[in-house]
Image 1: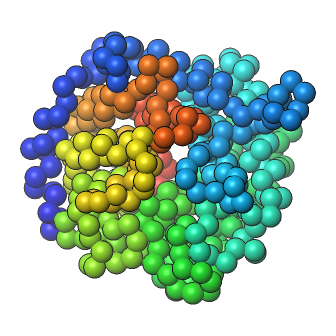
Image 2: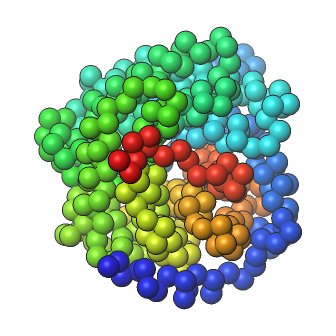
Image 3: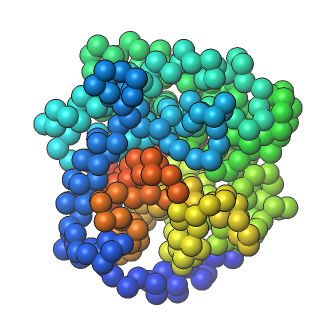
Length: 394
């Protein structure tokens, strides 16, 4: 029995000082803003945050929205972060209302798709050259795959880019297969060196990667079901008695406290639910934990350092957690959904900056990622929960 399951709703609403009612809420500066205006302004900001090539005459846009963290490769933002961040921005731009008639978004998205597809020629995206250690190319595989499969399903890949998109999907699937951890399954961007060595998987990475694979299969691409099974088995083993999911390894040995695990709990419980292995009660428990311990995430937002004691909360968990909280809300029974949406959306609005963006890092550039994740959280009520595994529940 998970320790959080009985305590959940008692703390679910106590920290909510403002509510999203009638489509309006208060942002982080206390100003009233409608949900619709916040989404519209957020989309405009994302489009405007596209990188330009400073060495090109006129600073031509590059179709790139790189995620910026502390990690560098030869002093540069690694290609995995660049592909992953761009893919997340593209999904946000295409999910927001008005995309069909917005020429500026169409052009930006086409450039983003072009950048992601061209990334398969980058040497540091090659799974053949991968040798484990600390390596983030897998984030590019996961979110590049997710974006291209989503847009393929929705018929949003421009005609002239369909062949390149198909090649990139195949490449990212090969990359995910090639970087799976031997024997135990799952994925981790922070492994011991040596790709053939067994190493503890990461729940933080395995959950989203499995959700990308579910989507790829639904979009008609060939996915190794045995690989999915191994990943799911790992997630099930990573849950502790408290209901938390450990950062990596076995849940029986590595638990560090629910307040630092809420983002992982949401990502993993929603993944298991989509695979037919979870339950509404477990997802609800994770959602209640997120709401009750939100302050533990917020105190690390826009701060230096990563896994800081006592709960090991890193700033990059912040909007990651909000996105998967929004996914979890759509798994709740209809009679509970409205209240949970109100609470999660209010929390998203709390950290909206005065310029209409969201950012959980100390780097200004990462507002493209934070804004994209926040908007997709606000839009989840319209999109509904992600697609599940076709074989889920068998």
